[in-house]
Length: 381
Image 1 (cartoon, helix red, strand yellow):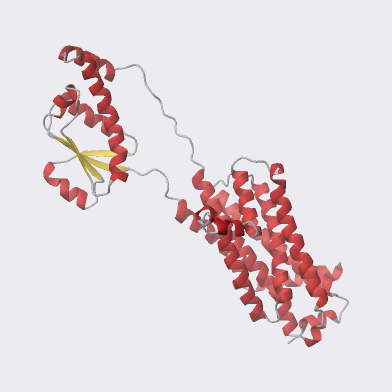
Image 2 (tube, one colour):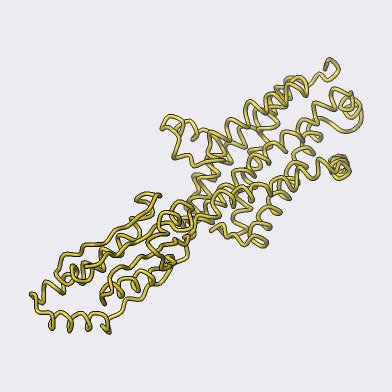
């Protein structure tokens, strides 16, 4: 135990002294938060700018303009007809609604007409306002039809309609999907960095074999099991710090709620960290040089992260790729977090947790077997 503690403290001291490596391990994962905010941070409702040209002096035309001005997320301005093309072409206005002379009369007759909407942004813009205006005019036209051409009766019903005591109150619910998307993007990037960090730390074993440090250590009371165990502990310490820093910055500084309790998220990520360390040791056990180890890491870790959906939703991939992703630990971690965000309890996700532990166990067993079969350090080149 004394030897293991010495190896752990020595490895941690070397990491702390290397400022570049320390920065990479601890602060590069925070880039994932910025990527998530850039990708999903501006997906909320935006204000649409609409212009109104009113050529009709009727009461219904004025009320229609007032109604449009009251639509949420729509800012209305009155403009001259001569400025329509310039305002639309310059992008200052998203659309312009033109009420021609005779508009009020057509609505009173039950057939709304003499209204035009101009936009160069297509139905994605005009459809939003058009649905509100059509519904409003349809209600007014229905009053006209009910009045049967009696102007006095229509005016009475129209006034009652405007002054109706029946009101509809709308309450906005907090949209958590944006935070969940940012969390998924952040965790996906964190997974990539965690695997890279584990690979870099495990690669130290090969580097020390190359410079004969490993041989000198094996000549001391330290054996290979203690040496590998200390490497695993250092890996887990670094990954734990990475997880804590990333989640703390995300929740406390950027105020992004992941939709999962803090310590539950930490626990799930630590289980994956074990699988990540096991995978890095497997790569190290099969690699003969640091160059081949780096190549194997790039060949295995980066493609599997892409395939598992660390950087985009796995649902957009072909079904065949989605099936392949089910054989990757990254996919099971992301699925576990997604299910927790949907309200599932951790106990109900025992299958996911068991599979992550199974990945970790399988990787460690492969690494242990391979290390035990190739323990001749003297012939290492």
